[in-house]
Image (cartoon, rainbow, N blue to C red):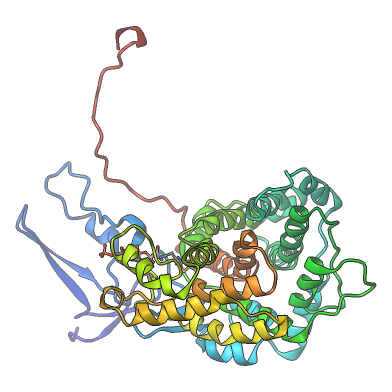
Length: 444
Ligand code: ACO
C-alpha cells in the first residue's frame, strides 16, 4: 500500500498511513505506532503499552480535561486563538444579526436552518408547551421567600421528569422531540416563576400571543394590565443575548448533561445536571460576580488599586479569562454593542458601565493580563444588560440557563445518536494506601 493512501478509521474519520505517532516506551524499549485522526490519538491505544505482563497498561492523565476531546461533535465550532464561534458552521455574528433565538435553537437541535414551514411549526410547538402543571407551580410555592432562583430552577427542571415519565423512553424519537420542545418551552416559565416567587408576586401565566423573549418579559413584569406589551428593542436585545448563550460546545455544564445523559436517564434529569453545573461561580455564576466586583470597585479612581489586588492574587478579575478563548470572546464584543442600547431604552445612566469600560481598557493595556491572554468573556457585559433591565443578580445565571437549554439538548441528542457513546466513566490514578487492616473504634 502506498504511504499516503487514505484509510477509513473505526470512527468515521480518515487517517493516512503517515498520520501516526510512534511511541517508544523507555521502560521496555518497545515501539508502538498509534493512529492520529482529526488531530487526536485514542487514549485506549496507549493501554497496550505495558511495563510488564501483568501491568494494567498506560493511561492518559488529564484532570479538568484540558487536552482531551470527549466526543466528536458537529454542533459548535470554536477557534479560541482566533476568537471564532460558529454554530453548524454559521458565524455567531451572522446569527445575532439576522436570526432569532428560536431559529438558532432549531439549527442547533436539527443541524440545519429550517424552511419557513418547519420554523413556523417549531415556533408553534414551543409556544404551545409553555404552561407547566399546576402541581409544579404549587411545589414552587413551597420554597422559602428568599430561595436562590437557580436552586428553584434546578429542582423544578428535575421535577419535570416526574410529570413526563414517558421521557424515559429515550430511544423513541417522538419522546425525544417532545422532551426537547417541552424543555425549551417551559424553561422561561419556570425561570419567571422563580423571579416572581422572590418578589412575593403572583406567578404570571405564559401569553401565547407573544414572541418567546417578549413572553418571558411579560411573565416577569406584568402586573394588572390586561395585556403586557414588551418593548420591541428589549425583546430583540434579549433575543440576541440568548442566541449568544445558546451553545458553547463541551463546557462544564454541557459535559455534565452529556455525562449524566450517557447513563440513559431521561432528558429532564440530564438537563437538571447542566443547570447545577451552570450554578457554579466559575461558570454561569460569573456575571453575577462581575456586578459585585464592579460594586466593590465603586469608582473609576479605584481601578488601579483593584488591578494591583488582582496581580497580588488577592482578587480575581471576574468576567475575564476563558479556558478556550485565548483572545477576545466574540460574544463579549457583540454584547458590548447592546449595553448602551438597553440603557437608553430603560432611561438609565449606569456608573458601573463606565467602570467596566475603563477596567477593560486598563487590563488590556497591562502586560500581566495580555501575557496570560486574559480578555473579557461573555459574562463581563451580560450582567450590566440584565441589571439595566431590572433583573436582579440572583437571576443572572437563570438568564443563562434558559437559552443554554437548546445547546444542552442538541448535545444530548447528538450523544444519543452517536454509535460510540457508552456510559461516561473516567479512570483515576489511585494514590491512597492499600491493604490496610481495619482497627476497631475502641483501639484507635
Ligand atoms: N483574574 C485574574 N487572573 C486570572 C483570571 C482572572 N479572571 N483568570 C485566569 N487568571 C490567571 C491565573 O491566575 C493563571 O495565572 P498564573 O499562570 O500566573 O497562575 C492564568 O491566568 C491561567 O488561568 P487558569 O486558572 O489556569 O485558567 P483556566 O482555564 O483554568 O480558568 C476560568 C478559566 C475559570 C474562566 C478563569 O479564567 C476564571 O476564573 N475567570 C473568572 C471567572 C469567569 O469570568 N468565568 C466565566 C467564564 S465564561 C463562562 O463560563 C460562560
